[in-house]
Image 1 (cartoon, one colour):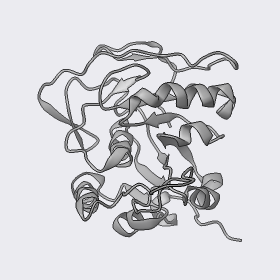
Image 2 (cartoon, helix red, strand yellow):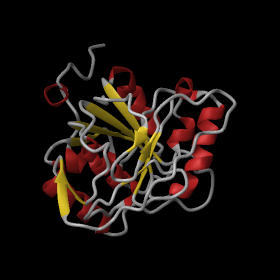
Image 3 (tube, one colour):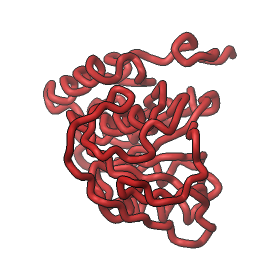
Length: 243
């Protein structure tokens, strides 16, 4: 959970952070950020990035549940969400449809932040709590731009790197199997190819070995095979709960 959620200021690296509530019926507040400058690579919680480092780096702790958009996300959340102890992060479209509390939204496609969050705030999901947005570069609707190095393999992998850079100690993936099952909102037409031969598997396994260090686990699919499934010993509390 965030160690300090009360700050409302422009950080020394140029990123404007304004947590808070968005009144029901009002459009989401938008925060412009400065473009990250390139400098000497640094490591934050084991994640490589270019300086200057956003001030929110290493300010969070505990467990983080990252919500993806594969069809299995419903089953994954049914198994895990109610027992989760910690914060939540959406990757792309689930920010619109997840009705519970949400602390973060990550995407490589920040141009969609406006529509995702306007929909969320308009429905008062999560009681209208302000969601902090993260992307790989500054732009409209981006709260924090992370210049993280050695990232590939879709927004989901990038979200894992951001979660660790924020300081979270354990990350659980829901609805992120990285297979060809498509999205929960696919109605017709071809499904998104999340395999790309061996390319996606390669970058995920490299990140597992070089950066995750058993700090990221998954509830389903190929990522569960690569990273393992959360259990009581890893989470630090009883899971799955007894029937």
